[in-house]
Image (cartoon, rainbow, N blue to C red):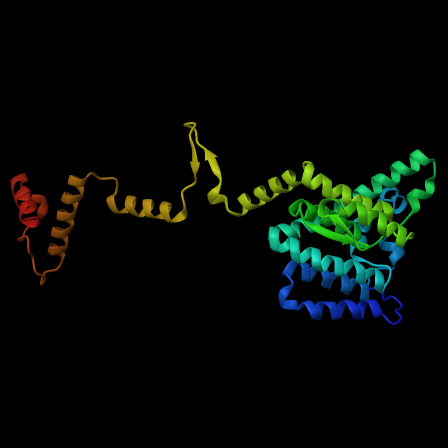
Length: 310
């Protein structure tokens, strides 16, 4: 792995201080693991930033699709990492507790890829509209696009809440737009298109088909993991659930026990087996008399049946 040249890393120390202040036991697992991954890749990047940042020319034109997966988890410097991870800390705690760790992990995975894809699409459109190919060479890294998507989702789950952007109270559902403008004014070098991509992904999730598609994928994976709960159709046209293994085993045991015989045939077979056992043991007790059972007439067999069950 490529090791970046680092200075004082004050932002990293402040981030660790914030984590200790909140308490690791109070941070949900997916949020904590996501932050740990970002910190680890900041300290030990997979490759130099220019080899993992996402842009149209390298990613789309040259089919370097690994950038789509690497770019969200790399950061330009310690302050870039600090601001993104502090935002992730509080958004993650709030959302993961609301929607659950499994769905939150799925959401982060999907958002990480989709924000990059929307970014490539927007930069391509800008390059064509503005007739400026430099848009295709603008490179972006960082988790902020995903964070803007999470902010949209957070506003969806908390529509009446208030938040503050630069000290100004803003309704939660509009906070993403206020932050988009505020960050661009404070840090003009930040990726406006990257942040806008996150907002678009978040809107597709809450208002578009993304949430339904994710739910469909989750249902398919869940049903594949538990095939006994799948609904099946038989040749009679009816539907139902597949029998469990215990039911199938018990049916097999019952079939082996009865041999497919009626109740009367079972009684007769039990009597014959008992008489055969008596005949094989010369010193054993013979409760039903002696002799060859094949030589008994029907009246004697009937009488012995009555003696056995009375």
